[in-house]
Structure formats: C-alpha cells, structure tokens
Length: 264
Image (tube, rainbow, N blue to C red; front, side):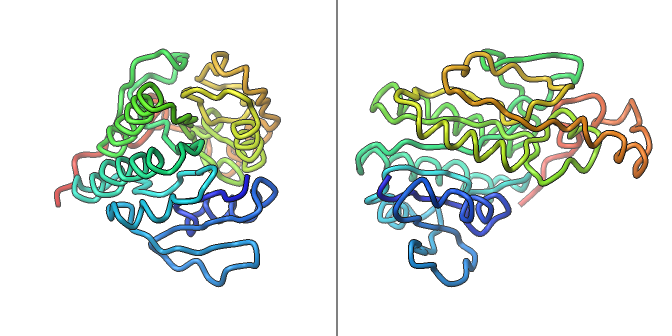
C-alpha cells in the first residue's frame, strides 16, 4: 500500500500497530484526538475527532487501507458512545466511499455477543447479544460495514476483539486472549487476501478453552499461534480460582453484563 491509516493511534493497540505495521505501507497516517508525539520520516500525524465529518473526510483522502481502532473503547454514557462509535463510524464509511473504497479492518468487540454463556460455542452466524451500550454501538458498526460492502463494495474485516494484551490478566482471558503477534498476523492476512468481503472474525489466539468458531474465515489463511493456556498456572497462583457465580465466570462478556446504564 502507498498509505495506511490507523485511527486511535495513541491508544494501546494503536501504538502497537504504529510500531509493527510499518511494512504494510510506504506511509503511515496516524490519527487520534490525543497527543501522538513526533512523526517519524514515514509517518503523517493528523489530530482528528471522528465526530467531525469534514475532518474525517480529509483524513481518509489518499489512503489505500484503514485499521480503524478509534472511537470509544469501553462503556460510557450514550452521548459519548454515539459521537465516537455511531456518528464516527458513519463519517468514516462516507469518507471511504468518496475516496476509493479502501479496505478496512474494523475493531469490533466480543461485547457484541457478551450475553452468551461461557458454556456455549458460537460462530459468525450466531445472533448478536450485546451486553452494553458500547456493545450495541459495535453491532451498529458491523451492520454499517455490511451495508457499505453490499451497496458500494467497501471490504471490511469486522474483528470481534476478545482481550488483546501482552498476557492474559484474569481467568476469563484464558478464552478471550489474543496476543499482539496473532493480531498482527491477522491484519497481514486481511490486507493480503485477494478478496476479503465483509467477514466477522473472532479476535482470539489459539486458546484451548475458546468459545468462538472462526471456520467461516479459513480462506484468510490466518492461523493464530499463541495459546493463553500457558498462563493458567500463573493466574491460579496469583488470583486463585474465580467465583463460578460471578459474571466473569458465567457470561462471555464478563463484568460488562452486570453494569448498569451510565447517565450523561
């Protein structure tokens, strides 16, 4: 690619991708509302609020691909969620439609299906069961991506990220964890495959206790290589066995299923 846009580039995953995706494009365009430091020679830094349609239009202009990590990344009140994840998504896809249909990696979330029990195994065809306003906004984003694919041909990988951290930090993550290495491998496959379409991908490593079936996206050639099971003994020693009646032990979305609605 000539130019790859990473939104949310000041965040945890955005910062990691800034360092590790440089081989995918000649120029990296980095966007966030927060400070991103100085630009390297191969970088362009653009401060942008996703709720600002004109700014997003200019941000997307000239980009061959987008890794969309920007937006509200946790639960919040509706105004915050709507501005970043509803209006912001619409602005991004309108800009993509006007500027050559770049291929998009969309950071969705496991909270789109959070009310499934941990005893259930689900796949991309399973109905959504969001556990929060944040989860609802990500369901909207998946639907928007699907419509822009069917109507305008914009290809998007909707990645329902589980828990992308250097290591799992609790027992629920023994099922949801995705290593940074496996996330990078996934993004490489998404931009390499000749025809992407608009698939739902569960973003998790090759965990022994996975709840998610990714067989529908085998055509991507993505083969996660890490496994959260290697951390079980350490978690048992540090935290003890989890309470079987807690939301973190019952529902795939964990504690998000127990939280109320935040008022503005």
